[in-house]
Image 1 (cartoon, rainbow, N blue to C red):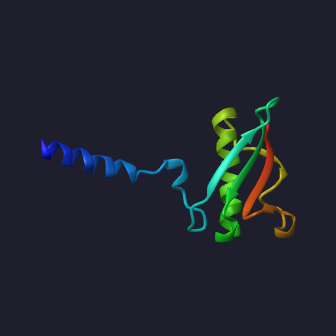
Image 2: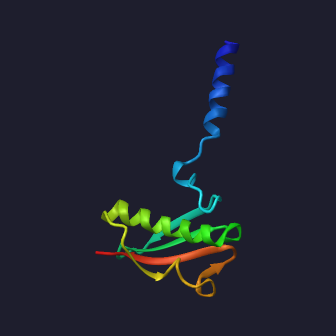
Image 3: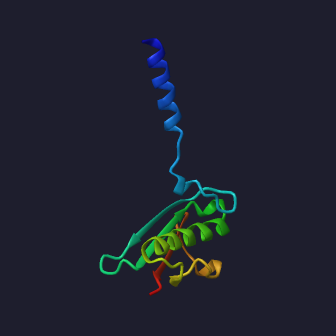
Length: 109
C-alpha cells in the first residue's frame, strides 16, 4: 500500500514538471510566452504576441515570427506571410507595449 502511494506521488511529480513542447523552443537562448489570435472573418489574418521582450529583442522577434509561421503552415500548408506589423521592422517601429511584442500578418494564398 505504501509502495503504491509512493510510486503514485513520484509519477505525479514527474508529470507536473512536463512542459508543453510548443513552448519549450528557445529563441536567442530564452523562452517566450506567445499567443496567436485570428480574425473572426478570415482565419488567414492573425495577430501574434510574445513576451517578455526585455529578455531579448531579437529572440522576441523570432518567437513572434514562429507563432505566425506555425499558424500558416498548420492551417494553409505554407510559411509565406504578408506582414502588416512585421517582426523585421526597425526597433523604433515595432509594436511593444508593457514588455510584449505584437506582430500582425496574413497567411499568403
